[in-house]
Image 1 (cartoon, helix red, strand yellow):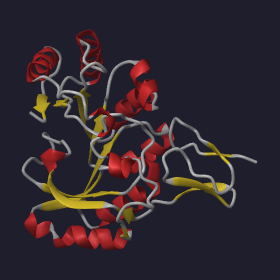
Image 2 (tube, rainbow, N blue to C red; image 1 turned 60 degrees about the vertical axis):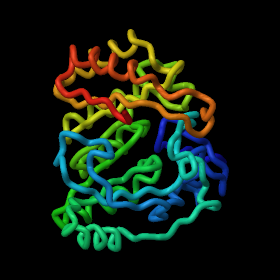
Image 3 (spheres, rainbow, N blue to C red; image 1 turned 45 degrees about the vertical axis):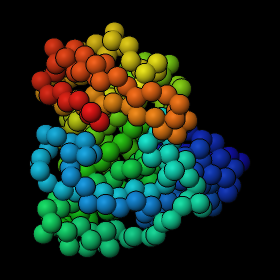
Length: 275
């Protein structure tokens, strides 16, 4: 009898012992569990602007952690080594929520304000994010989330209630693009709306030549954002060759700056990224 995983829009139907598409969840003893819980592959004290968050506590630093696995198949992924991993071919170590909070507190003297859940898709292992974020708040520190937003809305609402600021990738504004990477545009839009009602939200749009660099689609996107709140920051970022697109060219700088000017007609806080 198959067991359905309802964490993301893929809704994998799994046999006992089988792993989900994300490589981070497994059907075990009649339920689907996180196997990347606390399995940290990447950890670094980063400037908060690197998330990117420009309008939330600028100048501060954040202890950033990531695990392995992802529910998307982006051909241009910058972190594909951990995103495509099942945890068996990479270095990792277990860090409990208690240990993570202790590490975050030790770095306060260096400007750290809390913990950012990032690098891979953190919400495929949302249980760890929840446990850590609750504990972080008990110690008067901040929680930052960087996500593709392609998560069941009920789970998203449960997590976002413990998050102080979130950057959500709004990768494109067409269903065709999201089908290509394995997501669902309407789910992401719903979660963006949910987040704006609860916490500080910034959005990132990585412009990939030939995939999502259509000006009309950009106009539709920024108009949609402006209808929610024209003060939502939008980061329009430049693509550099990676993963399955090593033979591609970087996004032309003129494209990024043109898109920024278009977006500024509707939004108050628009920033070029990776330039």
